[in-house]
Every structure is written in structure tokens, then in C-alpha cells.
Length: 268
View 1 (tube, helix red, strand yellow):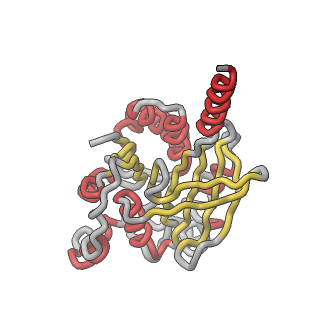
View 2 (cartoon, one colour):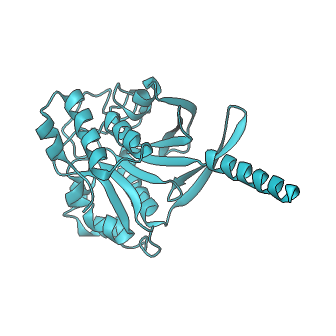
């Protein structure tokens, strides 16, 4: 009897440790701002060079993904490295209070179509992978693409540039049957101008769920991502997460809260 109780206690302790060590991850694909290859209103040359992450508007600037999270007191950067000539840098952050990891990839600006395609493939389950990194002397396995708990796209809405070009559109999404698998309502965020109008059919076919996307023109900056992740980590409702995003946007853009609320949308 005593031995049986001892075994039960050991199982409970072991199970508790497993639960404590559970890892959650968010994988954000960032298309670097690019004056030359994207249909954007030109920004200053230095921050609009899609070949240079370190100074890019969406990566290296104050509110860019890498810089903003690196300066955050809530996250710590544990790794940064180059992947390829398309993914110019990958950064991995850990949330200081939970076992939550953020993986962000900086795609070369001219490869924005690849960035969008990889995002949709991640939503659909066609793109799936894991990373193993060392942190505090331990190896940690982190899911990315469809293996992440949350996926996202940040940057210019490249679908605006090809919406009237059926051949390019088909090449990007239809010639490869990326939607054949489905992702069981994978949660996704899309921070780009009017994303709910342009990405609707893609997310529906991919069986993904839009946790946060946009209805108007906007600045896709990292403080919105941080606001979403904070609410997501805290298991807040979709409406609460949307409100966090609106408050962050209101604060940094110096606009009215009602104006900020009108930009964002959650769900269908």
C-alpha cells in the first residue's frame, strides 16, 4: 500500500514537471520594408532597404521586431542568426515569466511573396518544423510554422500589389495545393494594411483562425505584436487581445482610442 502511494506521488511529481516545462511558441514572419520592390509610399532610403535588416523599418528601427523586443523588459533574446539569402535573420526570444518563445524571421524585402506564401503554408499545415536551442544550459524544442501555437505575418500587404494580376496570384497560392491538409483552426495574426479584406479566402481555405487582423491602413509595428502576445500568454479573450492591440496603437501612434479600435478586427 505504501509503495503504491509512493509510486502515485512520483507520477504526480513527474507529470507536474512535464506540465511546468510545456513550451509555447509564436512564429512571426516579417517582410522587410522595401522601397524598390514593394508598392509602398516610399520611406527614407536607409529604413526602406529590404536587404539590410539592421536598419530596416520593420526590423532594426525602434519599433521594428528585433529592436523593440530586444529592449523589452518582458522578453530576452537568446539567439540571432542568418538562415539564407531570403531569410536574412532569425531571432529567438524567451518570455521572462513563462515558457513561451518568440521566433521572428526577417525576409528580404524583394521576397515578400515568399514571406506571404510561407505564412499561409504555415497556417494550412503545409509548412511545419521545430527548432532546438540551448538556454540556461538546457536544450529546448520550439515549434515553428504550423508547429508553433501562433503564427503571424508582419509587413506590407503584398496582395495589394498582385490582386489584379491573376497569373501571379495563382502562382503564389494555387499551383501548389497548400490547403490540402488544414491546420485545425491555427491561430494567426496579420499586421498589414487591410489584411482582413485581402487574406480572408486564404485563411478560410487554410482553416486558420484570425486572432487579429486589420480593416484599414496601418503601421505594422512590433508593439502590436507584443500586446497580442501578452494577452495570448495570459489566456485573455479575443476581444481583450484586440483591445490591447488598440491601446498600444493609440499610445505609440498618438491617435484616438476609437480610431485605433476601428483598425483591428478579431475573428470572422
